[in-house]
Length: 340
Image (cartoon, rainbow, N blue to C red):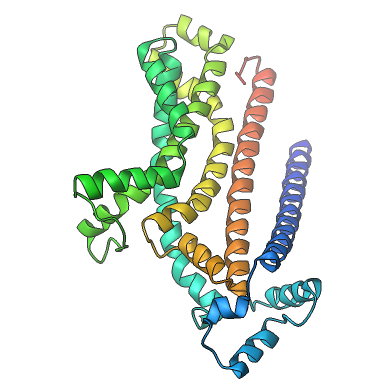
């Protein structure tokens, strides 16, 4: 009966956590959409002329002027847009002549493919380099890894993309500078066109995860239970990968969610440098053409995805911490000392 009561309390805690995060996500989306709408209104020039070009009839101009509610104050326009968005209608893109959700649906898979692939590459490599740096602390390997990670964390993605393009396209002529091909269409060409943008998205993730893993590992391997495990004759690799890494990864899990959101945001720069038809290039084109419905749709989707992956990382961290707490309680009841 006591066990059932404990499980019920844990379920209530999880439900409150989910509802709290859901409310925070909705509030973030509301604030982001409102600020974006205000910033769009501050853009100089005529949005109708920017979307459709200067050579349009007066009837077409008046129709879009009424369609975008530009004859109303900005707050009323935002409320009308929000009302339609809650009903699933994000408007019509004048620059692409299609509904906003349709053009976004065509571009999202490209950005998700690049972001997920960069994430899957950066996480294991970052953890591996972080472990090496922590285990070899004070040695040349640690210095090399730490220095490289610190430098890579400071490199702007667009600058790195231009540098790679200059070296491998202009100087060496090995890789194409732009374009996009899916792997199932032409695998070889897809690899050649993906290497440089994927490198730009991956470098920062590897560097940040390396630094976080190193910091966490250095904190964990100084714990008493690690020294006890070594004194009992356990091999160094077993102590590191089984006992130390399990607890050191908890703060890294939170960083993973942040890095996934950062990769999605970084796609705005990378996709424009390499002319990749994804969400990033779509957003920049929409801003340059002042396509108000398309800008709102792109920003809202990026904010939603970033919030979801961020809270997923926090949830994984909390779940890991909760499991560790249960293990410690069981260990105390059994008369054993289970490490944090």
